Structure formats: structure tokens, C-alpha cells
Image 1: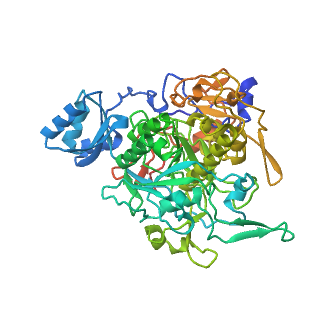
Image 2 (image 1 turned 90 degrees about the horizontal axis):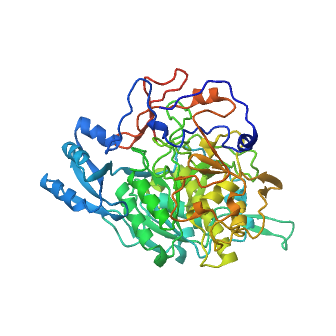
Length: 609
């Protein structure tokens, strides 16, 4: 269990002062490199050995019942385990090769037998995953378009030649998404169809945020005369010429199973060269039920990143207790806890280019991740009251008429959603612009690794005043910054050599105001700054898992002691316990509480999505 420090804040000198100026300095608390946050021995109780089963299956074991499970086996032992399950009257279903696992439907007794089987590495719930579009958000302002707010309308980039796999509820080919750039569709639900469709609507909205043409959108015009007249589609996507490939893993209610997402990830990884896929967008997730190193969805995401894919995932919409309205921490969902993934929270730009009025909605999940204490999210992006293409046959469109938005002809062909799902899509679109800029500068055969992309997103982020690093990561997405640096990095340079062709500006001008970059990277439990991005570091290699080891010459490793200015605030506002997040049906987030909690902490009950 985490402990709060109530000692007087200690004065920071030298290198600590440098980090104090960054957004993470005021909030991060880390354990020593030899321990994980929730693995610390609680006072008066012995440390518990890590179980082979997740928290939901522990409940099945105690209370009985059945469950869909994902069984991970030791090398060459899958067949033997399956035979033993067959002998117990159980049948296995799908093989998940990327994580050496298979799925099955089992009862409580089978869970116990699998947990005791020496050939089994772990048994996990084949958990239900859901999308992260928040329908409780306020309508929001449309004073400026999303592309204006981000500054992407000035970049002269469209995401051309970049492929983005969207694993979601499908795609409705109409309105802004009727072109050849959204012509690929696969259905990974058990009753799959071959033609593109979206019976929920979330996937279409996400696809539109990324690559919507905006051709049916109302147009914003300004200028003193016809020669100076400028037009901008209000609801154009971030990267309108990027290719969106749709993989249906969520049903008409926005729900699917972890195994279906993993199957789709495996297909994308195996076919990324053939289908020319660069980015994977996962605007979905489930409560964290176990540590990251046994979580099947996290393992599948890590495998996808190691294959060279840039995986962008939602932080989750679990930042707020809907009953009390309180904001809390540790609401990150899986696979947002995947170390190598780019985990995105949401912020509200309030329809202005200015960063002075930016706020982070209460629903955006704060870090750290449950069990492991990873610092998440990595960044935040616009996700509040985002208008995008609608799927008129989808459940969302039918159920929430007040969310419909009219096109230039007065037809309700758009839809408004808030959430970290939308922020994730915005980030995927911005990365497409980044990759396009890099390829324009250095050619299609020279690629940026997923670790480089993640590092540049963090390094160029624009910190939002008033929010800590477990709320905003290193700051707000800065497309202008990542595009600038991407055009300077010659990734064909030898390892450990200087690879910048020029010095980056380290500031971005938006609306006539200059904003400083975060210039900070959080690598596991180390904070890295300085000339980190200037050299082709060993850490940038595709095979390196984010945060697995310290490879830096200039780092701060956070120990057990708190180094922020007001630790008492932390103690009053963050709930730390030793219970896993999640319930048996996946419909709630359980904020852990124990009798060992410090008296000045806040205890929550169920946090329903």
C-alpha cells in the first residue's frame, strides 16, 4: 500500500530544481527500482505471493460460477493443458499466439485446477472491453475548429501515405468517410460480416476525428476580401488523407471481449507491411485486474509495439466518482497501463487557440496505473465535445438525438462525443502528420520507431497550468512541435550518434503566444531531460520495452521520499489501497480501501462508468 509523507517539503537543489520546473515535478512519487508500488509490504501483514489468477477469477474461485478465460502456457505446454481441460469436460476456443495463450470457458473448479497446474503461467479473465466516449459531458464550444485549436491547419500536412488501424465498433461509409481511404474492413466478432458497418457509432466517430474530410461540414470563412478569403471545414479530421483500416471488435452496445481485440492486434501485426499500417488506435479498454506483466491485453499491445507498430490507447473515463463528483486517481484502464503504449487523457480547449483556458475534464482517468504504479497518462489531447462523422444506424445516434449535429445542408450527419476515446483519435491523427513530415524529409524507407514517437510526444508537450503529472502526463499534445522535430531526426544515423539535422525551437507559437515544451520524458521510474532526443539512443530501438531499464546519462530516479512542494495535498486527495480495480461484470471500478489507510485519505466506493 502506498504511504503518504507528512514531513515538511524538502528544498530542491540542482538537477531536482530543473525537474521541478516541469509538469511532473510536483506530483510524481516513485519507489526504488527494486520494488513495485503495490508490492510493498503493508504494516503488520506479510507480503502476498503473486497469484496466477486475476482479481476477478479470485472472486469466481471464492463464490463459484463460470468465466471466459485466457490461459497462458509455458513453452510447448499448451497442448497438454488443453488435454487436461478436455478431460474435465471443458472445450478450448481460440489460440492467441502473440502471448502464447488460448481461450476457454471454465468453472470455479477449473480455475483452481489451472492455477495449480505447473504448466500454466497465468489465467486471466477474457474481460469485456468498452469504448470510452463519455455521454455525460457538456455540449462545449465551437468557437474555433479542432484543427485551429491544435494549429494543424497551418502545417500543410494531411497524413498522406500513413495507415491507421482503428480497432473499434466498425465504420459507416458515408458523409466524411466515404472515400477510398477508408475502404478496408474486418469483423472480429464471432458472427462477422464482410461489408463495412457500424451498429454502435463509436468507431465511425473515431475514424472521422482522425481522417474525416469535412466535406459536408459547415465552413468557417474569414478574410478582408475574396483574394484573402480563407475557408476551413468545422469538422474536418486531423489527417484527412490518412488511410483508416477498420477492425470491428465492439458490438452494437460498444462492448467486446479482450480475446477479440488481441486477435485483431495479431492480424494487424502480421499484416502491417502488406496493409501498410503504421499506427493502431485503441479507444477502448477494461478495468485493470492484474499486474501489467500478466495482463493479456497489455502483453498483446507490447508485442504489437515490438513488431514496429505505434499503439495509441485511451487512459479511460474513470477520473470522477459519478455519485459524489469527486475526482480521484488510479483510474487508468487496460491497456492504458501498457508501458510502451502511448496513453492519452483528455483536455478541453474550450474552443480557443489560447492555452490559458485549457482544462482537464473530471472524467479523464488519472494515473498511476493500478498494481504497477506506472506514471500514466503520457500526454493529454483535445477530447471534450468533439464533433465527428455519425453512424445513423448506430445505437448512439438512435439513443442520443441531442448529440446530433447538423451538416451544411441541415442534415444530422455529425455527432458530438466527449472522452479519452476522442483524445486518442486526435493523437493518432497528429502522429500521422508527424510520420508524413518525417518521410517527406528522409524518404519512405527511413522510419521512426514507436519509442521515438512516444518520446517526442512527451518532449514537445505543452504543460497545462494547475494540473499534476498524473493528470496530464507531460502536457498537452503539440502537433506543431512533433512535426518540427520529426523533420529534423535522421533515423538512419548510427546508434549513439547525433541525429538531429538542426536544433529544435523548444517552443511553439499558437495565437501569437509562445509556449515552452515540457522537454521531459518519463521512462519507467526515471525522468529524463536535456539532449535526450538529440542522439540515437539505445532506448529508441524497436526491441526495447519502454521503461525496462535506465539507459540514460542524465536522469532523476524517484525514491520513496516525496519531493513535491505540498505533500499534504497528495495525502488528502489520492486513494491508495491494496484491492484490484474491477468487479465481476466489468461495470464498475472498485477503488481499493483497507483498514490500513492513513486517516487523512479519501475513501471512495464503486465508481461506475
